[in-house]
Length: 170
Image (tube, rainbow, N blue to C red; front, side, top):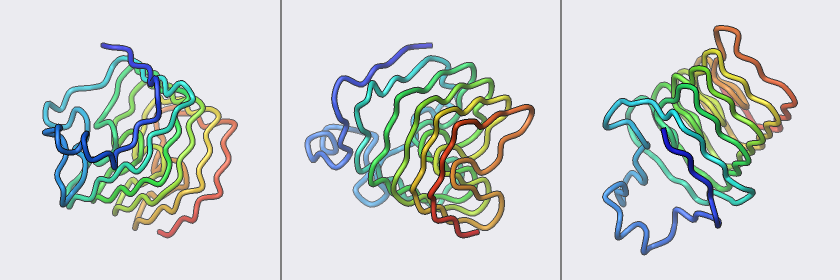
């Protein structure tokens, strides 16, 4: 239950960060935050107008995105540029699956997101989740439940003030 604020752009291509992190693999890219413990992210992440650049995750696994899953979390002011995320089911730049009771506000995404089922540029699957002021011009590729912003939004989830110029195939 921590709160995080970006204080500068975060470039995932940075060689020093890659060399000094146990969460980076040269072949597959960065690991999903929280997946190893299957715990929920319950705090907040404020991008503060800064950019997550060049995030790459390319694995033959389910649940691929910056965050594994969230509950009662807040994500705001987040920009993803030039990302490449590839997985099987439940794939999204910000959250892979189970965004329960989560608020996602003022988020934009560009890059490529690819999976099979529940694939979206911001979120793979959400329940009781609010998305507001969302923009995507990503390429989103999948087979079922594929969307320019969200793969699937259930249980009274809402999407408002959203604009997608995403290229969606699926």
